[in-house]
View 1 (tube, rainbow, N blue to C red):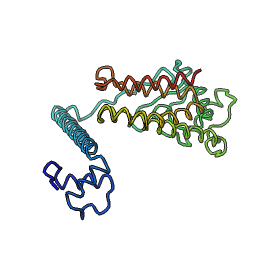
View 2 (cartoon, rainbow, N blue to C red):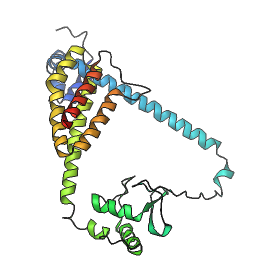
View 3 (spheres, one colour):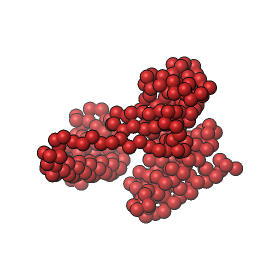
View 4 (cartoon, rainbow, N blue to C red):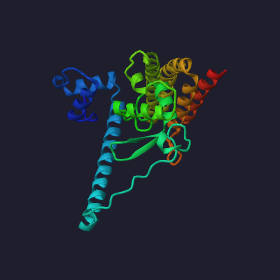
Length: 283
């Protein structure tokens, strides 16, 4: 068989390793080429590999630019700047990160020092309500876990403030208090991730497939899979599902300054499908 138009043997071995063909190194080049072409859509594998190589090249260039900029900044720094640095004054926030209200009395707010040296303040009432309602004992902004010492301090401030609320430290160690809430949250996140993977596959199909093949893949496989996940997400939490739907439509369109290429208008079709799923959920 003529293999002049086929890739070299190293490329064939690399593609075979990606799709998981057993004992591919023992197969002749022409047999391996036919197997990849007929069973695994080798053209798509080559496009995926070329895109991956392009992304790796861009990442290396970005890393090189960052290292060059970092080295140039290090050269500009004089010894006088490095020696005896003036301690920086930590700027505290004036707005509560949870309720976006002004920070109240300094004695009734909780200060949390993060590992990077920044300090954030919370209104004690909104922080306690958040922790007890969510069962998530982490910093709401950075997801850094609150230690038992932090929670004990929160309880002490709440008592001094006259808040008649349960202890957040005791709530953290009560395994049965938030088991149902955590299970529901994990289930919603799992559904969102499954639907999000379908959305990512849809965009990849639009960007890499032939238009006719792309339409067949969307109608026969991707749209039904998305609709199944989205119905489950909608039944569990309609408001959360609508917000996810809006996010996915923006993801499909791309950023305003650099929208995703859509030569055949398939992105508009997909966004209309997503919107119709959301509108159908509200009626």
